[in-house]
Image (spheres, rainbow, N blue to C red):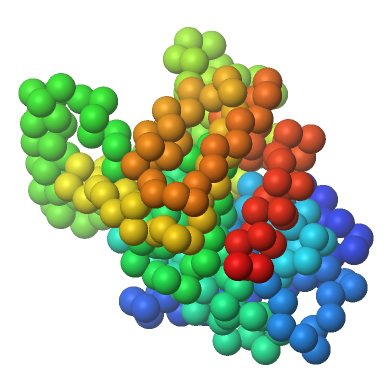
Length: 313
């Protein structure tokens, strides 16, 4: 049973697709095409990644549902090892493979007869923002990148003191022995298997915000119960996603942030490190998760003009 968190517009066709990434893992995606699209010509296209731990049935579909009606072929995908995509063990997170997810989407789009392979852009929401930028650093086929409520998951190591980081790395390193002895990787979901009516008490502010999306009916999905295998975090302490963000230039970058978002500093730091052309677009009276699904706050006009301008150059 499909679990989309939004209603498909009557003017849109959505098709399930599957394709391989360069590791041979099958990626599951949804291809959104407006019903009035002329498929006899080559159209610009976008590949959209979900928030960290999310799926194509959530935020990527919300964006795709709207943007395909603005002149784009749009592909929303499930990251490898998660959702309906292939890969074992399940619920792994990998900075390299999650960046590869975007390039695999470009592979797929670029061979469709109705897509202009010289006009393919990427949109990353939350954690996928960092992965989209990482992909663009090493994939010149991505002609423009937009990030909404961007998280740089590899910057999380900066929240630890040196001693705390050593302790955390030691804990996760030793977890590998536990996983090996158990014959499976530890995975501890945070959100309930079925949506609840209200956010539990006692959560910190940020966790409470995420629960209000993933744990309630608003954004709940059986394929997005929170978190990844425990040892997945180890590689993010050793792999910096955005070390080469300046090399994306002269391809443009658009950072979209809520003015009240707890994650705003990720975009501000990436913006400073990026070379021109770049733009910071601040959405008034918006928090981090508002840019997941609040269609009255997601700046679709800005996204449309950004990509059409980029593709025209």
